[in-house]
Image (cartoon, rainbow, N blue to C red; front, top):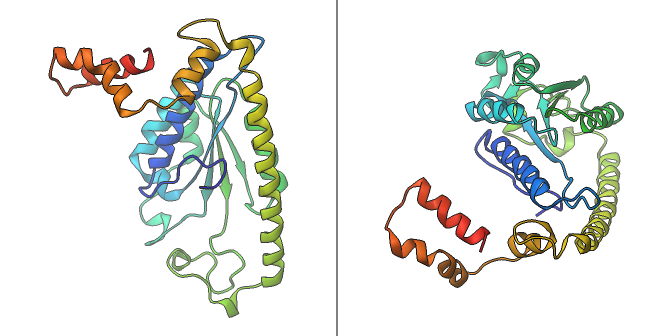
Length: 258
């Protein structure tokens, strides 16, 4: 899996729900393990989405919850090319997405040209400085851009452009190689950040059974096997046979706070 990518999804909108859960988890980790002089968790969650995701109901529900919880560690980048497999989005979709998200208590930004890397970077920097709500960055793009007979058409989703009709082939290959180099450098930086994070565990250890570094090592980094799960949950499960939410919650707490 690509470094930094925690999940990719098939069903439209599912990844947006995943991202809200990840952002909520970061807030939970932050409240349980961070100390004023030793911030162990401070990451952000990014999601890339498209028109189809925004048309799905799950995106509305997830966005509403994220805005209510003021998840400022969450940034969605919305690739708005106004094309679906069936054709133009006008066939079934005419939402003012930015207005809808402002109603969900989101900060909204837009980039007029997806190829303007400087504008996109500036929008991300601004989003990272927002401290009281999540951010949606609407990026306007042209599907199939650069393929003279495919750009702007729904068929671009179904068929790749023929090699003879694609343009700037050598330049594109050079850019791809450059991106691989940049990715390798980012991976190296990620490894250094992880080493630094492990070093910050020191001041947090030996503080509390349920908080601090000891709890983090035990509950987050350590993986309980089937026998350990059975041992920690066995007392409750022997007392009662059930398959409801309350039972699942108690079994989860038995493992988490063992």
